[in-house]
Length: 576
Image 1 (spheres, rainbow, N blue to C red):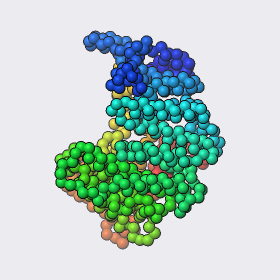
Image 2: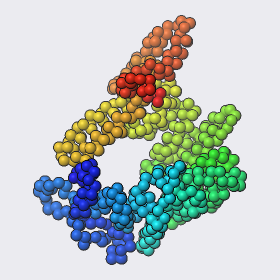
Image 3: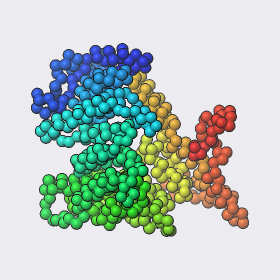
Image 4: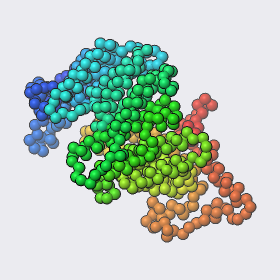
């Protein structure tokens, strides 16, 4: 790896390609379509001249082996060969490597993207091929070849006994249609819609992530039909897609189904879960399409189930799908119907945003009530808790939001990526001590991480793991050091310092003494509010100054090195 990285860093790609071809490696796993293995995953490349297996006799073999005792795998070798060949413009060689990889790993999406880059895009970046100003037609022969290979893989998977459907080969068919729509002017979206519907019919009941797979293509379909006339102001292709999704959730609704008191067979339970997944998938499609259309609540109500219907569907899922709930001592898992509650809360918040009359809180209160009930049944679902924090933030209920955030169990690196959920609400809600404590924990995290990276990177160099040391240093420099959450935390600590008691942190995180045993210090005594007529104005000024960042201490080091107005840098990251 180090030798290859050195050659690539020196732009000696031809030498790197030749070096890769001569590296001995371990054999590939089972390749689909081979009859010799009988579909049992047996090795089909044992006769490869470049295939070697490690021979480890005892600890002496490991201690005295030069370099890594584990050889280069055939998979890794083909990956690097295909990548370097693509960069060198050797598209046939690159496509040959990706085809061999896909026969062994047909669900690996990066291999499909590599095959498309080799055959369809010919190494051209997608933003250039699919640009809005200067569109370049795709390679039609390569497009047909890639589509034919995907069909071949699908047929090979169907012939295997006991083989399950894999999403990759089917999803690449949608990707091919999407690239054609983006690259070719005047191309219709009929084929794209048909492939989306075919994919949804196949995987909607099977995979919970089906909607996430097709969401980019739904948005592309809507954007590509902008300006096209249709019934009720909706383009015909989009209307057909909405009707298709509506039929799915209507056919798979189980709200009026009798759960029964008898034993449920495993097959019947499997079918119930499939119907629930299909129902959720269809509602997600309707929400996504109507949101991109921007047609308002009327169209959403026309194609999606009502809130009472969805609530009834969720309640039915609690009894219709037998199992031990987490609150009753079951495993720490989420319930299959939790996604319905998330969809309902999105619906309620969307209705709130569409309302022009006051008050707007009744929908938010209904959403909070549903989320509280759902969290009671599924207390280990983080998505429900994050949604509840968002609703309580709109209701300005800082105390309840903070308690839910604490139940999330955010630790270590998650502090930097999840604290944005609660920090602004803590400041708006007047919980300045909690805001400072959370910000201080983020500052301590960055300080300890910087120290740990130095220690572990040194140990990696000593043990010969050079690339691992590079990964640690790169993570620290490119991910941790430029963190905006770190700058935000510094600003909160400085802003809230004037709005809290000095004794509030005593007995907190840094002390073992309970906070209730710490004598309270009145804020008025610290800030000079002694009962005069000017106290109210002085208190208001303290709060106003906390939101004014003019002339605040600079948190960005580059601000001190500006030499002209053109290079002016703001004094605080919140001004950016």
